[in-house]
Image (cartoon, rainbow, N blue to C red):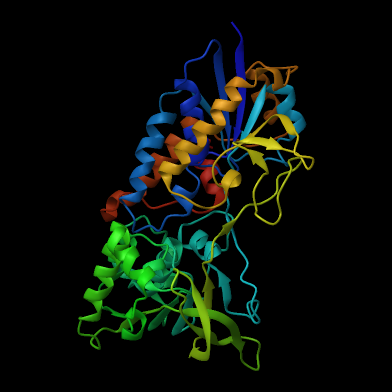
Amino acid sequence: MTTLRLAIVGAGPAGIYAADIILKAERQFGVSIDLFEQLPAPYGLVRYGVAPDHPRIKGIVTALRDVLDRGDIRIFGNVRYGVDITLDDLKKHYNAVIFSTGAIRDADLDIPGIDLEGSYGAADFVSWFDGHPDVSRTWPLEAASVAVIGVGNVALDVSRILAKHADDLLPTEIPANVYEGLKASPVTDVHVFGRRGPAQVKFTPLELRELGEMNDVDMIVHDEDFDYDDASKNAIATNKQVFVIDKVLNQWRQREVGTASRRLHLHFFANPVEVVGDENGHVSAFRYERTRPDGEGGVVGTGEIREVAIQALYRAVGYFGSPLDGIPFDAKRGVIPNHEGQVMDDDDQLVPGVYATGWIKRGPVGLIGHTKSDAMETVKHLLNDQSHWWSPESPDEASVDALLESRGVEYTDLDGWHRLDQHEMALGQPEGRARIKVVPRDEMVSVSRDS
């Protein structure tokens, strides 16, 4: 019987779901799947892109773990595509490859002063507080007043972590260095800015509610932002999510404020104009233009310029994909050009044997449900494209282990992930925590490889 030898590059939800869907699909041939991940541990942004105080969202890990623990998917962690293994290598050992490498860089915000000292990308900060092994162990938390640009879930995650008292994060898996950094933060005010109104935000009601549940943090909203136009009123009346968001915000308008030691301010109808710097080239203020509804769900500028004094700024305006060696890339959109997951070259011709799924396929939009349907679309084409598959010289599984070992790659496997998982949980147990995440890459590899 024919056996499909498939490589999947990226062991986040997109890659794991794609593997699961293929193995459960009705087909006339066998399947052997190897999952490659540049980090020593799997789960991608679920492990390194979700705030540590989101236990409900991290419950997704349970479903992903169930897929991997079946044992019918091999994992090669700590393997970097383009460095430890190349496209030519994949062609020698597999019939096809699916890239599910996601989008982990910050999208640009093209305004004057965005590159000043004290101006950061939200994705970098998230990587730090989630204990990503490839970022610095320290973060410059020196500002009393901070701006966060954006009104998506990542913006609220960043805002919440900045405003929340560090001790309130101790029950989570927050790494020790992150706790110490946040504990020493002098922050008193976090300002969140959105270009449009409350009825057009991108965050979910769950994220918003969690802001209001913070200990010793006042929520500041402004009455002038709630003079809704007809388009906003219609959105509130017809969309349950918008209705709940409006309800929560209006409850906050009724709250007594002024007693908390920290404040989180929500500013709507604020279009970024400039990040102002001081004489030393450091962020000193955020300048924006007040906007107003245009009657159709959008906004137009009013010409009124406002300024808020700050000492740090985080842009949370979206994620952006990174190019991969030997694979076409749309530098404008930050994705691999494709037709329903079939990768296309610069002449819009199908690239044999190469597929994409997840954010590197469609851009950084959608939640887990979108990731599953996205993977199904890609898998459907892959299974029907047998005429486009590669003909590998060495399709046997052992040849991949031998290749990596010959190159001195200290790869980790499923048993290694189980060892690291158990180790992190054991670290947390004396303190009554679910786990304490191991941060240094070399320590992750050492524990995984039992060396």
